[in-house]
Image 1 (spheres, rainbow, N blue to C red):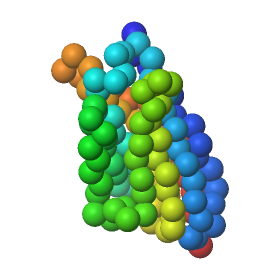
Image 2: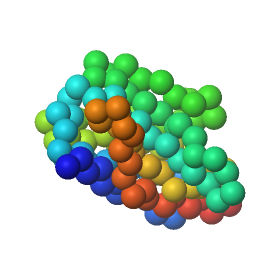
Image 3: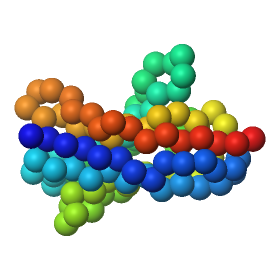
Length: 115
C-alpha cells in the first residue's frame, strides 16, 4: 500500500520561510514524479511544483523563484522549500504521485502566513 506523509507546515510571518517534507512508502520512489499541490479555503486544489525521476522541476508561476522542490531518493523524501512567503500562500499543502494510473495523496500539512 502506498503512503505519503507530509510534515513541516506551521505558522510563519509574511516574508518568512518554511520547509515541507513528504516521505513515501510502498512505491519504488526513485522512478516516480512527485508533486506538491495546495488548496486554500474556497479554492480549487492547484499544482505548486513537480519533480520527475531525473530531477527536472517545474513550478506554478505564482511560486517560481520563491519555492524550490527537491528529492532525496535515499530516504524516499520530497521537499518543498518555501521562501518569501506571502499571505496568499496560506493553504493545506499536499504531496502526490501517480501509482498504477491513480493519483495518491497524503493528508496534507497546513501552512499559515500571518500578515
